[in-house]
Image (cartoon, rainbow, N blue to C red; front, side, top):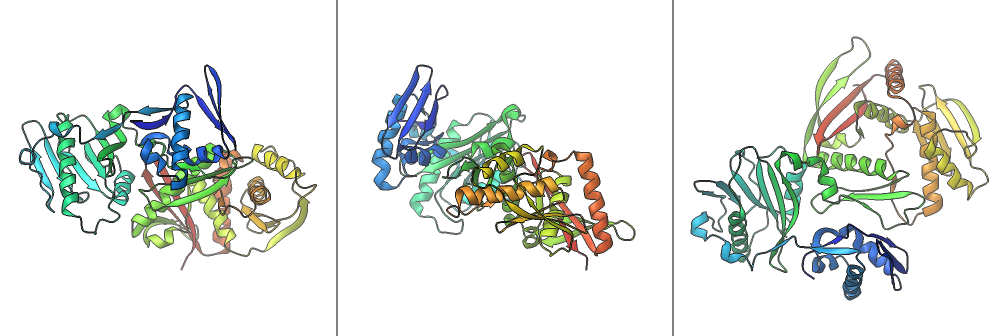
Length: 484
């Protein structure tokens, strides 16, 4: 089949262990085979309109590729998937490409500049050019997957017209064969031949993947003009967040990763949307901390005259910062991390059955209901420190928060994961900066401010914060540091 594989817009596909059901307007089509559900779940994250049938089957072990191809054909007959024409075959269009002498391109180490009466193009066959880019110049760069990740991470800050071709070269410092350079020249000639005149008011970002096996270019991303230039949709378009290959009931378990980036994070939680957005922010933080050597943060103190200062710290220290989507949530989470890292003296200690504790929070009630199916009671030690932190401990798990209900939820979440999933999957619980689901913003601000002031009286500390905007999301990071 020609084209890229995507799910059909008018059908819903549901996978069981030994059957896959395709629900469309005509009814339900059932595809039955042993373990076909596992085959479907292996292919599902990649059926997003960016892979041809052949490249899609490469995600399967070789012994399953024939069965996978047969399954895709049956799924297409049932209306579950379609084949979209998005791949750009070079061989059939080389007659439309300009000659090398007309474009000024050659297989050299230096970037080539091509100009005519309408357009000016800057082409680099060996990675992106870091110098300042002009708005009225079309840029075409051949990049490695990691270089593409760096360019996408800062997308929106570049020139108006950017085109990237992602090659299979694993690292930028490796030598490139002459045949590969000539192949890139041919691809560049063809891409430039497709380009129309540059408009000063337009913005464009194109990303292709070079598929050597079938001598074609596969379009991965396409942003054009201000209305459609939605940088915030990059995580969704890249399919950055996917489900882990575990049962998604009773908890959701997600993974954030992509071949363009080094970060790879997995976490579990209750609400899909909340966990997915939290994972994207954590993914941004890890990528940011890996890409820069140092950061300038703002430091605050409460003791003596209240002061603010700018402090430069190495990237390695940023990994202990609490992250969130707002400054207030980051400050609250930083207080929790500070308490977790120290042995606090408890002003009160009691043992309660946490499955019988009354709560208005929906997640707490849901987790209690799940655990009551396995346990008659769950005795946990509950304590509160002199600084105002709440601790819960049961079955080898411990939680801490400035809000009692949140500490209870975090404990129940860990126990639920251990009870229903055991140690088969190694992953961590959600970070949990959803303070707004437990307390109103004004009340949270007063609580955080009071606890920071109390902490400053008991210890010499300063409060550090940092923010960065990426993909139209603002990442906030905060930390409580002992003041030297």
